[in-house]
Image (cartoon, rainbow, N blue to C red; front, side, top):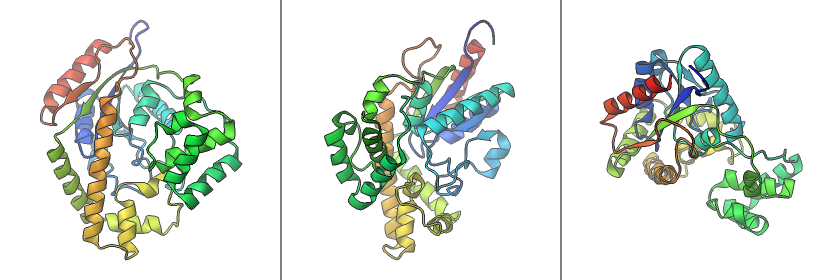
Amino acid sequence: MTGTRQPPAILVAGPTASGKSALALDLAERVGGVVINADSMQVYRELRVITARPTDADLARVPHELYGVRPAAEAGTAAWWRGAALAAMDRAWQAGRVPILCGGTGLYFAALTEGLAEVPPVPAVARAEARRLLAEEGPAALHARLAALDPETAATLRPSDSQRIARAYEVATGTGQGLRAWQKAGGTGPAPFDFAGVVLDPPRDALRAAIAARWDMMLREGAIEEVRALGEQHLNPALPAMRAHGVPELLAHLAGRMTLEEASKRAILNTGQYTKRQATWFRHHDLAGPARTRRFAARWANNTQDSESLLEYFALFLGKAR
């Protein structure tokens, strides 16, 4: 690096099953990169198959970071991930490699490229109360409570988004100020990197087919056994890992509440609906963060067939940024 130019980093994002992991692998081989996980479910140790984490063959091709590093019993947060990702990015550059962040969790990318609000520690009693209400009343009822306390934050959350609703409720009751208000007050700024990124956006029919094919592959590779072992831990069902796509459905199957065919149909449908929300998020957010000096903005790919042009695009970015 020369002068005051920030080190470059690459963002590869997109909905579940859009082909971003394959692109990140090819890119890492081309430019000498480290693939850093930016998926909120692939961080969990127990969810190797059901979240389609990189295979042993993938791990042998290029270095990977932040995959399977957290127990399912401990909820990962955007703040935790940001700190871990920044440390991984620094390690990559110390080793002479390019950080390539790959995933589908928009909040993680925003935490890195836009920053996070500095929310004061929430008292344990407020956190316990939020979790109790969530378990007893459900997310929709807790969302209604949140709307009465903090309508601004409640308006940004879906009534079914249990984990974020509980977090917003505990912040409102535990700090006396809503989460959106804390976010507006400022906090950590954008990470000190020059970002360029791509959001993969395959056609919906191709994405649905990829989701179904991946589900069949997961079943062949041991997803049922993996979910059975997770269920035997008797974890709080509100934990993020317990809500990973396919986990609730296979737990219901293992408990005898639905057939495997029914569980599969529901898991595929729910995953497809989630990819729509992912795509909507990426359409309304600048992947590389707020307006800053950078050589390339985020780009869209209509499919994954043009990977060679994307590889050339990022090689050009790195050649100019270095």
